[in-house]
Image (tube, rainbow, N blue to C red; front, side, top):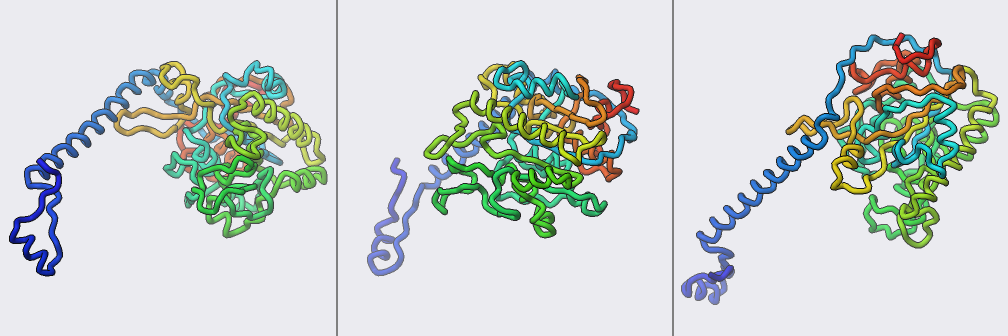
Length: 401
């Protein structure tokens, strides 16, 4: 039966007389069959999705049992300075004992190290937003076109008159609003497509995606060169967030002309990130403003992609959750960002301390808010999100005070 059928000769005659031709795309029977086919396709896709979720639950289920934790608000010391350094896409499994990450391993063995710390989810941007606001904003996208309107830590700091700044290593100027820099791609290129030579990425700068922050003080965002001048003078903000550029945060650039650190060279990415931290962290802890109540939180947004997505072991590691990871409602499965390092360099405790505290980026936010007596934002309010008390306890134990 033909897909297209013309009207009757009477209609054709009317068409020739000047009226608009009418074409029946399908007969009534064909239309019904097509609707049935579409319906079956939709039902089939839903069935496959449910089957996938159920298989995922079988593979991941045992790891997703959340402990019941009741935490009273502890009394942490008042931090004179907080520096948060966010790296990219590497879990503690790939970094621990890695010869390309010697300095990072030195930090693991000489300062505080949480061996049970997780990214909130995948991909990168939701983790940055979560750390800054206590919520992913419902996103699982890296698009720099997104905007977030929930309350954020910098807004709390403004209200409390606590100084803050965001350091984006290669941003060309304060308040720069481009998605990438440098960017030599056509203006018609989709914003999510990275230029091969780009160093700055807006998707790694959550401050630019909160309109309330851009509206108030866009000059709070500076590049690393300016930060180093401030560091040497002993005058830095009480809260500083540092995002290295794509060649130094272990993310890497897209392959193509001008790329000096392509994602296809993972060894180089780890070496570059390790070298960057080896230069920057001593500058911070030996600067005039650093004191015994200053702290650095060094972490990675999410773990690296699994070697084999079809391996249940690799998939479990990739999706392993921390507290309050996003949940697939149908099967009540938490989809986390995998285990990543959290290093805590606290001036008062310059000694090795390994802690096995189930935590994620919400815990860093909660710890900062606790020290400065700020309201807990978003999931930082939740009982199963712990404050990182063991790293600041005088007794050097894993218990809260």
